[in-house]
Amino acid sequence: MPISSYLGEGVADDGPFALGQDSNGFPTTLPLSMSDASDRSIQLSTFAAEQPVSCSLGRLGECLVLSIECLEQFLTYKILSLDGGGYRGYLAAMMLCELQVAIDDQCKSKGLPPRSVLQCFDLLIGTSTGSLIAAALAVGMSCQQVARLFLEAGAKIFPRQSLADLFVKGASGPLFDGVELELALKSCLQETRLGGLATALAITAYDPWNNRPLLFRSYEPSHGQIMIFDACRASSAYPGGFPAHLLQEGPDTQEFFAQLQQSRSYFSYDHSCAQRDGIPLIDGGIAANNPSSIAVIERLTNPHLAAGAKEPVLVASFGTGQMPPEIPYGKARHQSALQWNGNLGNPLLEMMFVGSSRLADDTCRALVGEANYFRFQPVLLSDQLDRPFITKNSVVRVNPAEMALFGGATFQASSEVNGLFRRLCHDYFFDNTIAIDPDSPDQQLHRLAGLLL
Image (tube, rainbow, N blue to C red):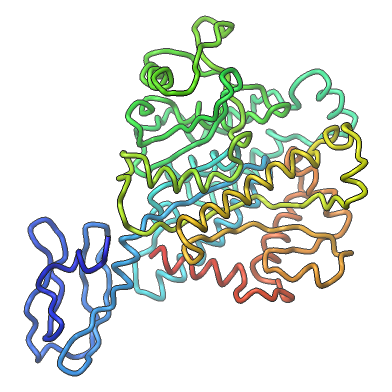
């Protein structure tokens, strides 16, 4: 919606004015004596702001010119998107801690009260480990507390195992039983239901029985009684890594299943489920490891998120690190099926995740505009590559030992992995001295923080 439509009909092309509020809290215009026309800062409130906003009025001849930048900020719908990636979610949590620091800096410089990352966004969406981060923020945990959760529970959820142990377990069942994952989820989410959240939350999952992606929505009335634990546990059930999660029909899920049955897509119950009919659920990354574009589409089309609103949309999307397989022509042409699929973190699956993630990036940029899409994703490339190939500001150079460590980090938590993540986060934001892009990830982070306030 044009900014002018919020300013009221009293805004004239000449003469002084000031913003006030009508009976509904919408900005309007009021007379302002010329004696008050000195440069100063006034406080105004809009329907979109919880806190008063400082707007700068400057003198231009006999008129006061209102800067509309602050209004545009509060008329912008803000989305936080978090990728999947197993224990690599710790890297995303550390990057969010850096965002909190940037927000703190902006609050101090603007004279605003402190705000958390959660308070800066209208919608949170997450896949797999990103669902855990998004849900933890949604129930009130700070970024620092989320990062600490990974440190304290990571080694229990993803215990360090030998390669032989991994292959033995992988041949007979999931690598992990999911018990420690469930304990960690319950410790931070407890009995909270989707409908009990103040900030909109969306979590991806996949139904392998009906072969369809699912999206759990806190803002959808039929999803309101579903436990956030169930949504996150489902989204985190990486095939072969953790057992699938069962969502059964019952009083809390009756409306949810009724909605599924009424949808145009095929649906049936899995009658093999224990006691009651239900559906198995696995990792949301099967369909959307980077769920940013889904969040934008939700904002544009879901009636419970004011679909059709014309306010601009801003997206902050955080990945969990990416290490391209770098497969040359000869290898791509002659590599065996086992080589494509046989290893943990196999190159085929990695490329599928990266490919769909980049499509999501392109979709978001097309929908919200380049200036309103912020993607934070460290890309690990070998320090043996020629210098010309390592010039983009998202690239972090790593040695062969670090590449091997990162390759197993999805399912392996250790002090060495933690140290690598800390180094990657620091180098990505603060030590990228060879980038040729116009601004660094650190500069992007602070620009994002400025737009969020």
